[in-house]
Image (tube, rainbow, N blue to C red; front, top):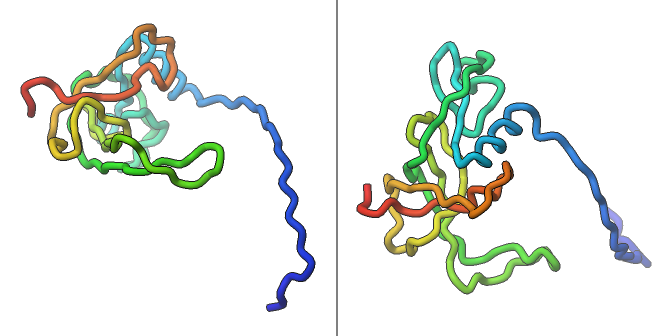
Length: 157
């Protein structure tokens, strides 16, 4: 393999603005978040409930149908404690002042789980199986950040 000689690097700042559709299933999911509700969709064949919703069951490949309200409480399936984050300006890693907990969360009534932040608990007290409740924004509007995090249910499991 030959070595590059006289190579030049040029950095060009570029803004790219675009829009895309999240699709009808996620559009409904976000709209329900705006009403402070968690919803999933049921597989008519194996009866599993998926949150967030998906068009096809990952177990039996049937087309899903039938919206189901789940939660609001949820259970921690797994978690990790982040001590660094990506710096949006440099793309490198930077230390967090306070560790951040990210968990795989399964809402009550669902057969699947999703990743989200957990606040109001320290890493030393976090546990698999812990019961959580959603924390909603003051003015939900049908957007992902209407549900910024979960927190432990007072009194535990």
